[in-house]
Image 1 (spheres, rainbow, N blue to C red):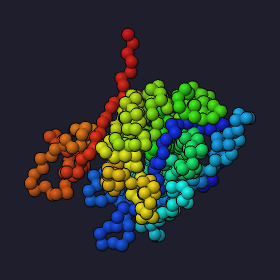
Image 2: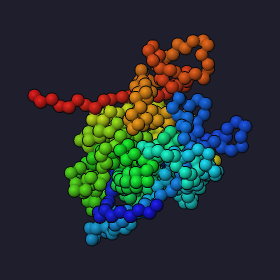
Image 3: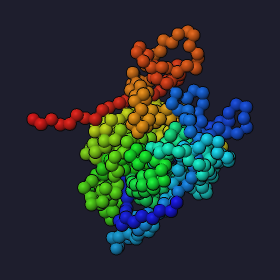
Image 4: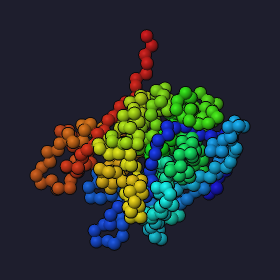
Length: 455
């Protein structure tokens, strides 16, 4: 699929330098007992909460190639001329989708690479999957979820989520942003600038082409982003950029200003009509958008963060975004003691020899298979409710105690050891969690501010 689109002056937006290492390509959890092969990251262990396991659809995957023509090349900005040349911007998109059952073929093995610690060359790795390449699609229209990875990453970074959601009746399009290596600070400008514009372009293109194909319902669109991708989906999701904020100062030649709040090209950086936005370890402090910009977010919002994120301070990033997005129904899921790298698959075997490589994937405290299962549980509940309109998922989101450790369930003695909390009256253990396994979490919920009343 080759699509060309012209949007003169498409330069992107700024950001706060220091977003650092974010969502990296995928990994395989430990091998299942009795098998010699690693388990695909989209399959979770026996301690996973209720909504984490795979859904009822088989999964297919295919690769799309998009081309947005005549885009400003910010890295080639000439300060003498005060301008940057125009170039075509190639974007790959990995597309996971619900497939027909029993299609022939072998599950895909993904291949990716990430920058290693200089001067080492990029590190290569493989990830086992459940999807079949180019499998026949299921005969229905599904919601579209567009995923934006972290800085200098690869779409297979998040197969724990992309495959999992496709099995649950979503079409999932993960953008390959083709960032420069994160180890080269001279090139930070490109990924810092391009995220929202890439997301808006891909959403609008796929919203049209996949609807014509009969694969998606163009009225049901959501975004998911990790780290730099979190900044991108918040901006594309409605948070307008502050023309006086740090991004405007970091981007040369005033190239950001047309896309900031009040700029002539603001609409190229913001989507309307979204059903939901998910931001995992989102990059960006309040002054990137300003209070006015974050107040412009109206789509339901789920933020997932560790409160010991040493790259992006929890108080000034995730928590401050939650507090200032006052016109959105919003949730903040906090993994206590976790750091930044909570959006990735477990580290593949090839990435475990050097600490730099492993740290793309792993958290110093939390077991990664546990993180991804918890994230998948809550993202499933959130999307099912706000994208598909399934109100039965409300009980998984509107938890009876903000602190998971405070939950109690006086289950009968005959209850099986692995039974999950059913929720309901008198039960404060979070619905869908096993006893003794709803620990270390906090989930906050806030409602849109009431409209101002006339005096």
